[in-house]
Length: 360
Image (cartoon, rainbow, N blue to C red; front, side, top):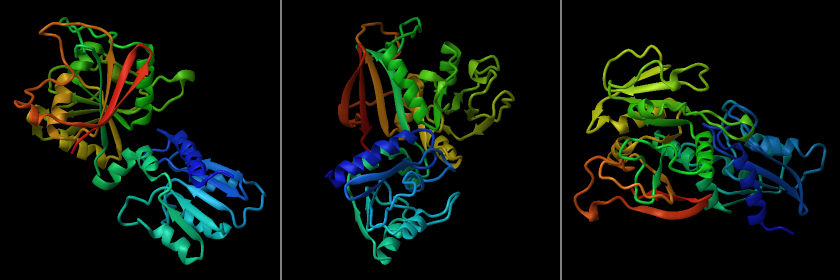
């Protein structure tokens, strides 16, 4: 018979199928087990659609699930939202036991669902694969706690730390496998951000291109210093796969943008913290920064970056004038350098992906 950990990992794998699609809601998976047999399973497939518990019980059909054990990756909701509370369904189905990976991080509702189930005589166990569940929903948790999006800084650089040659040529730094993975990152994030200089030099569409043509397109956020943006840029061209917003410190008119965010000025252009607050207020839970060296420098200086995804290609470019991933003034002493924790490396074709978390 499988253990609680094995069933919960199955629920986590199901939850991950909702990546991108269910935002701004969390990814949740659920497995219904009775006498060592999985009778039903499901996940939250899309925001506004039925929750994981509903889908799991629906997949049970007419099977007898009385006294079953339910494994769910997040504490069942106990409040009315766009869908009814999942605790109501569980109380109706009367499982003998509910196993929960992690509590709801929202302090206003945390523990309410579990307490209601316990009050009804249902055994509730929590904390099974808790760390894995928290990592799966790290962006949603961060937004729920802070109101600002979880920010991932992404770049592609050569082995000697260049993102373009001295002439500004950058296509392509990395190979096909790494570039394909970037589209998975775009699918998983609510919004993508670049500077207007990147738009001018590279003219990207900033869309998601996954195998089969599937994938969610993030909201495109462009930082503009009032120098580069023009309606002819690919991000403004029809068809608009996703909205394109312009963030600026000037009260300028961008009739070709879907929205203009006029924000306070920071040390290097738009105040990045003010930008993140504005995005959070608009329901953006996760932000992928694909900006150039100046944009990433501004973000790191403002302290808004949570995670880094740096792709390293086995190439040497050289050149004093070649652009590096993080420009700006930088620190004077090595003791002032930002630390990256939990750094891990993985191979993507000939390239290496380095991922880690910026120490607070």
